[in-house]
Image (cartoon, rainbow, N blue to C red):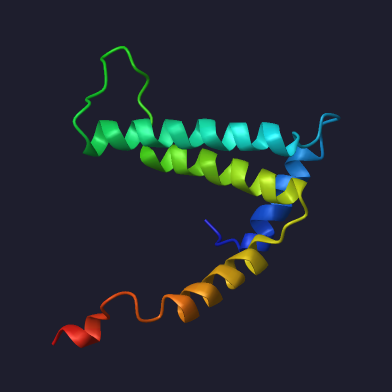
Length: 111
């Protein structure tokens, strides 16, 4: 499978959504969908790593599938607001590299 950039992911999702008259949901509806998908991810993590095993009647899903759903909705949300996720990521990394540069113990300092 070919690796994709964030821009390619955003373009792929946009091409998919653009096929439909309804287009992207409103920001509020998108936030509700993002929250719903995050809840589904939390449920799967709890089943696999927590104290709550799945019921035998529950459909088998994976953490990877739920992360994929969450990523899709996140990309939809960004696209609907014309946000370039690559630029947003770069802004966040700059913030972490400056504001939080001394917050954590670096591996090379543990010697």
